[in-house]
Image: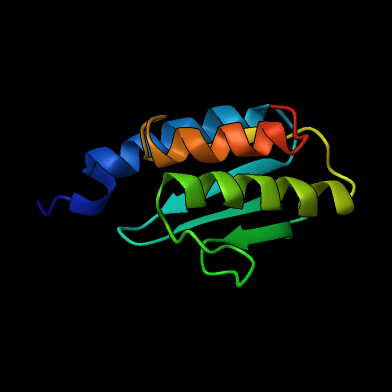
Length: 117
């Protein structure tokens, strides 16, 4: 019998567990993704199925790129855009990534920008 390797991958299982807890909160979620060069964040309303705010280290207003200082700038930018969209409380969806380094810097930047987790 063939095994679905993708579903048994550790990163996928971690992301699924984190996302299930976050969606149970009922608040919009601040979902992040980090690649080797950049970091991306979006505020998603799962009830409506739409993205309310989006920011990434590719934005022209962010000069630092995808490093820790750039991730903190992305956090502040996503907080600014989320507050403009009328969202002040979010659930932090770190996905498969550990709360460390750039992920932590983005979260601290979003908190400094006025978002509440």
